[in-house]
Image 1: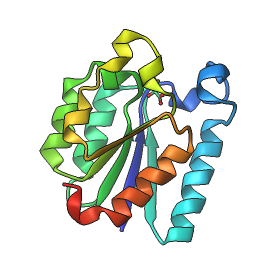
Image 2: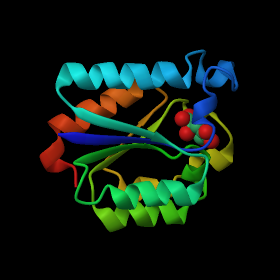
Image 3: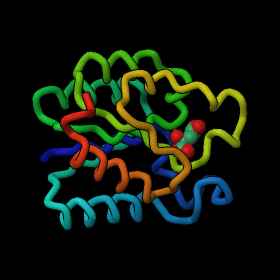
Image 4: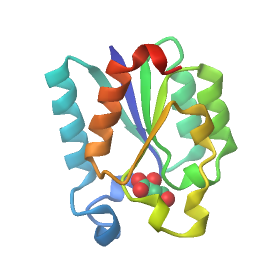
Length: 146
Ligand code: DQA
């Protein structure tokens, strides 16, 4: 099974940005954890991060016919991007939305997620472990996640 983990803007600043919100683990820690977990579970994983909306759209489009599932943290684009929503709908790849922080206890503008309607699950506020839960979900619930 091939999974693509996509992270949006400022996720590369983990460990530096707002540690009281996002914790002290770095983006490299996140990549290492995801890679090691995927290896243990026999998952072929690719990890991608960009600060640019169009690059995220391009990456989702390029996954068509290649990836069996996407773990997607669009970061701030969650709350603004119809383009990312449309890309996920266009490729029809089972996608799980992940957020490190607990959005429900944050600002009103973070309560909106455009991409959510195209995702089969949202894992929110579980920190870095949320990415592993999302991979588990995509492996185990593959047939019900369209
Ligand atoms: C985030 C939450 C977003 O609101 C924010 O813009 C981010 C990270 C999270 O993982 O908690 O950059 O997606």
